[in-house]
Amino acid sequence: MAVLDILVYPDPRLKQISKPVVQFDDSLRSFILDLEETMRAGPGSVGIAAPQVGRLERIVIVDISCKPKIKHHGRLVLINPEIISREGLAVGREGCLSVPEYTGNVMRAKFITLQAWDEFGKARDFQMERYEARAVQHEMDHLDGLLLLDRLVSRRDLFRRQTQEAASPQSKTP
Amino acid sequence: MKKWFMLTLVGKDRPGIVAQITRALYEGECNLGEASMVRLGGNFTVMLMVQFVGNEQALDDLIGPICRSFDMRHHVDAIEGELLHHMEPDVRITVYGADRSGIIAEATGALAEKGFNILNLESDVGGTAENPIYVMTIEGVAEQGIEVLEEALQKLAQEKGLETQLEPIDTLIG
Image (cartoon, rainbow over all chains, first blue to last red):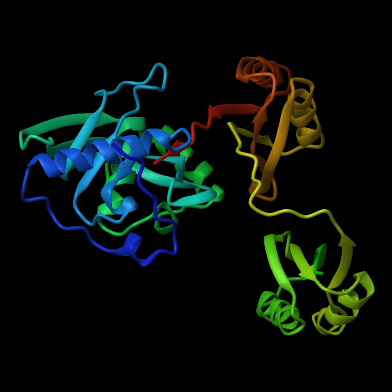
């Protein structure tokens, strides 16, 4: 196992679209162990995506189990993940290992239904909410060359959105 | 060696202010740092970190003609400046209510007593001329914890007739 080097913006590889994984073999699993070790070495990081270490394949790891009192599915290896449905919107603050010394407010779906494969090639479905859903959406953005910098919302939006949401809790993704 | 200055500017808002001021600074070999620029009540206001090789007077001379051409007042202060050392807010507070004198003083006074360090405050007056409302969004660090701030805001809501919301900011690092 090894801690891999994290690419930092403006490295152009962070803006590329990653390819699906086709081989679920030992080499993939060995890479995933390195990727996980890299994530755990990052300060307070709850997720990582393969392109952040320069491997342009659709692999992310998310583990928010360190956060108290938040619903989660434990350590998740998500390969070729697809969001099947989204519901609700919420603004939250995000930072990124690939964008040091910067945090910003980003709008994400509150609830998602997700399909992905694990490192053994087994298909899995998940229903996720809030913080875990946010982490997955943040990491999946990396697979499409998107950073939190591509999704910033202003603080003025924040209050308007919150009051709109309070007025219509059933609001759906447009 | 270049030193940091804080340049403040204020004047009647009109198009082109930022472009021309920053062009003059760029041509004067200044490096610009963090900035806050916003229109307040029809005035355009700028607070801008400027790194410059000369002294306050030389920077003043550089920016003076362009400021006068926009009929803007400006001020230059030598500062201790540093980039890439952000403090992260852990609480977002919204306070709003029918506009009247004393809202900010009451709210921030109650919060300061409980160890709240403001990093960012934005406020707006909305509503109508007959019934203006005051809306304030504050981000900061709860140095004595969130519970004491919640108590202070509840008291503020009861005693001063203001609407208050507190939301922890749990920055997601991915």
